[in-house]
Length: 264
Image 1 (cartoon, rainbow, N blue to C red):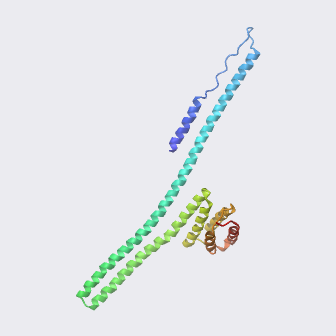
Image 2 (image 1 turned 90 degrees about the vertical axis):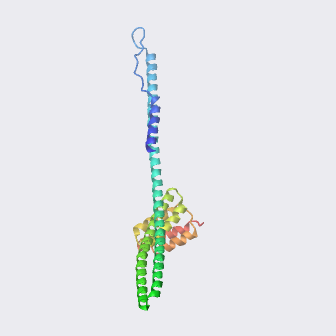
Image 3 (image 1 turned 90 degrees about the horizontal axis):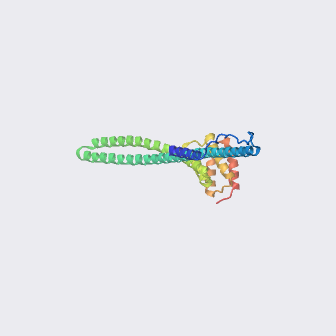
């Protein structure tokens, strides 16, 4: 697509240049019958040459403008495609992580059920053939096996659940920046609050670097006069109670701005 746009810009420039030709060489001045140039003819000739040079300059400038317009159009299209591609990549990563967690949980549940069913059948058969000592031994082995498997899969599920809040934090950060670029401040404000909530789950709420940047963005939205809901205010105040002490000034300023903006 980029090559096609460049080619079309060059074709337009060439097409415009076809109608633009360099000024013709200065012809030989007319002379009077006595061999000396006529003053009026010389002035008319020079005026014609000056008009032709001005027309050529205007055409050349127009050609340059067309070329610059084509380059600007290509830059805008490439930037838009890059933003759209990044958004799609974040969506795929988020959906992939959710599907992976759901698939692992379902697989663990199925395997545990199968193992428990098999061990139960083995226990019933052993009870019918052997004495109480063998039965107690098998019960102990079953408990050990199930406990070990449960601990193993529980660790995997816990690891997957730990990665999920971080992925949601990255996702809300990207979507908040996207809505800010679209000047949809209400949606961006809600996503930044959700970003702080996920930051709290990850354990980054004590990082003044991460929290400070989000607080600045929230204050910038409120300074634009964006109205917010009471639900947003309650959620934000609840999260800000765990903010780092070094950001206490920014927190108080943000609370003051929230009290001054209209409510939905």
